[in-house]
Image 1 (cartoon, rainbow, N blue to C red):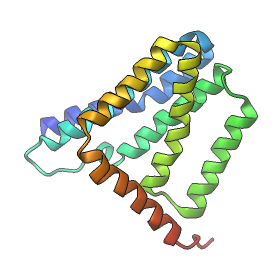
Image 2: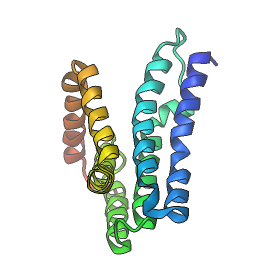
Image 3: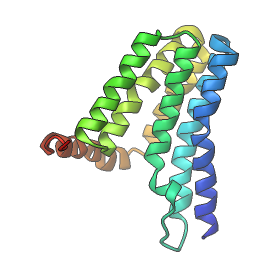
Length: 181
């Protein structure tokens, strides 16, 4: 396997492990770990940008399991954020359970689409950003600044590829009939 793909997969794997770290943070340190939770999200976003860029540097066209499941790893991070918010007491168990059950139903009903996976993550990340801005303002600002810098640095790609891909994904979901049981 090309070295670039191995490095990219290692970065993706470290991002996937955040699911466990977020859970541990909430259980052991609770709300006091909010600054670290906020910085971990920034790491997650940074590693997500880096792993794809590194993987594309490989001269050999090669797929890996982790590379092909990058979105699922991102969703695992979002699930970790949900678990952190629950165990740290930022959101209630009924609200967190309702969110998870709604998404289980959505994926069961419509199937797994990239646009749905992205939509699953967004409210959880926004919740952590909002809570960070409210309770640990400096760390919330770091998250917001990271997003703005990422938009500026990827600007031609974002409106030309990411947004249309997201919209087309929803068109595909809306045109899909319910799965047969």
